Amino acid sequence: MKLAPHLHRLGNDLVACYLVDTAEGITLIDAGLPGHWRDLQHELRALGKSVDDIRGLVLTHGDSDHIGFAERLRRAHGVPVFVHAADAVRARTGEKPKVAVGPMRLGPTLGFFGYSIRKNGLRPRYVGEVTEIGDGDVLDLPGSPVIVGMPGHSPGSVAVHVPVADAVFVGDALTTRHVLTGREGPQPAPFTDDPDEALSSLDRIAGLSASWVLPGHGAPWRTSPAQVGEAVRKG
Image (cartoon, rainbow, N blue to C red; front, side, top):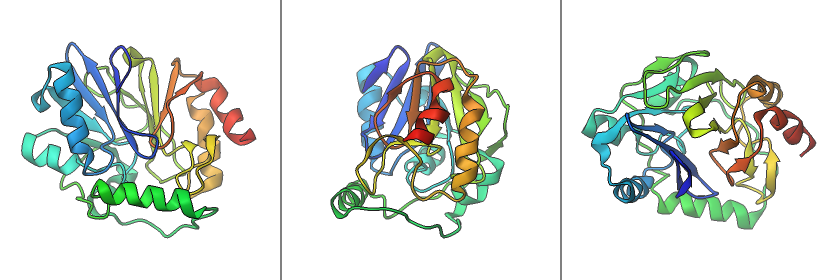
């Protein structure tokens, strides 16, 4: 789905990932669930492009609902996969601490897990090889993505700022639709390693210039990054 010039979303409000289309090629932000591979193909065809136009995939963190088709893209097409060094093991093995689930409602929870099943989310393919990145890196990829460390949801969670897309991609640093309760609006994401650190990290994007703040779960959010921290804390 096209959101704006250069900016496309794959998936839906339950699980989403993003495509940045430029004259130099395509950068992907996150890889959703394995079944989003078909969504990717559909979007590429609509653009008159192919997988060969993808120059890199940047992960906001290493959780299984963000690495979806990453290994398929890497192994079959040679596309490099970038992840913060602190989440490299998580992306390669799925190893992560157990965290409190928090509030949940039966309907939304079943809907989320049902969607995950339909998109082959219960059979994750971890990433065989990653390129490690860090806070402040500017990647040599279309759109020159800038990495902003956002630890909390996971140690290596990052935001990805792509000025040409007028967007900052925040992964699970926040959500605009809680997948376990169905509650909408900006709020902390579930399954977060360190909730206090995650809230503090929201201030790290306040100085960025963008009109879109794009989470991995929930509706795209038209706002200034400067407003994000206060809005989530109030939510």
